[in-house]
Amino acid sequence: LHSVFCLKTGQELISTADFNHLQLDCVSLYLIYLVQMIASGLQIIYSQEEVAMVQNLIYYVERAYRTPDFGMWGRGTKYNDGKPEVNASSIGLAKAALEAVNGFNLYGSGNHAVVYADIDAHNRNRSIFETLLPRASNTKNTDASLLRS
Image (tube, rainbow, N blue to C red; front, side, top):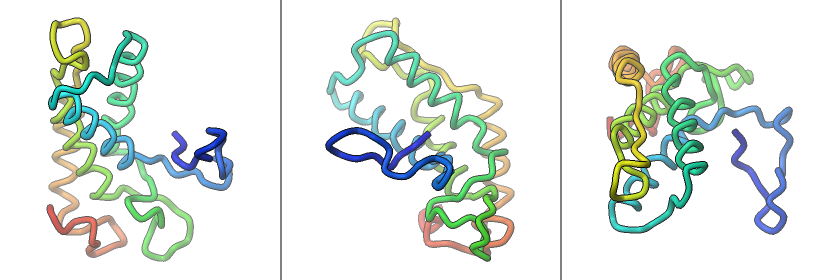
């Protein structure tokens, strides 16, 4: 998934070959905000295709516990050598997103747009997150992204 776009054209500003970040934390945060906005009464999702897209984003973040990425700051290991690693910030946001979306109705009412998260994936994210803490990752002792953990 790419998150750097031109506001006017919608085209990617940086190719994915140059910017191969997985954006697990970004997608997780999007899911959390989406649930909060819909719960407040906003109608954001209008079609089953959009529901399917959100469900696919849920599938995407469910595997955060085993997916090395560049973390919240986009730097990888503490040595800045361009190598991704499993980050507590990404796993923590994925865990929170899975808790927020599980059983949530994206239409706000009815039962035609309920999305679910795999409870086993949530438990694996929780387990790895608790194992990593208080470290930010294998190479980083701590990080500002963990202030609220």
